[in-house]
Image 1 (cartoon, one colour):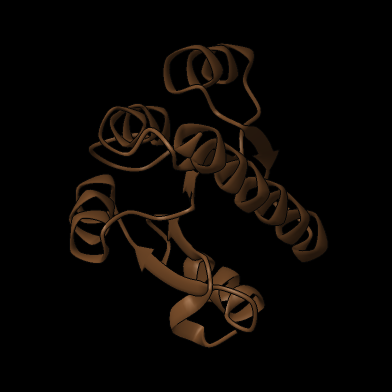
Image 2 (tube, one colour):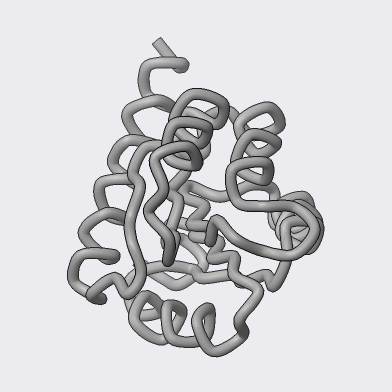
Amino acid sequence: MSRQDSPRVLCVDDEARVVEGIALHLRKDYSVHTALSGDEALKVLKQIGGAAVVVSDMRMPGMDGATLLHQVMRVYPDTTRLLLTGEPGRDSAIAAVNNAQVFRFLTKPCPPEQLKAAIEAGVLQNRLIKAERSI
């Protein structure tokens, strides 16, 4: 499978070193795109035509991760949404799951193996959703 045929994954975090680290771990298996804010993430998604998985940090200036993932859900309903946060608070988890229908809620620091497993599960979920829609 060429890089062009690889599932697209968008990683969003306001810390450049975090998205760079995630991209480094994923680039072998996925077509990885990054964004440093919610607004930038929406622009990237529009530019690339959506993604199989969006992984977003919860706490970002401007648009938080739950709000971003809710917008992603509305515009790209087949995209699997993962939320990554350094502060596992009950209220933010509830909002993310209920409003943005988040597939997985991961805490920072997230071991690369755990993140990669969650993304792989997200890609499989995306494929399942698309297959069901085509029936």
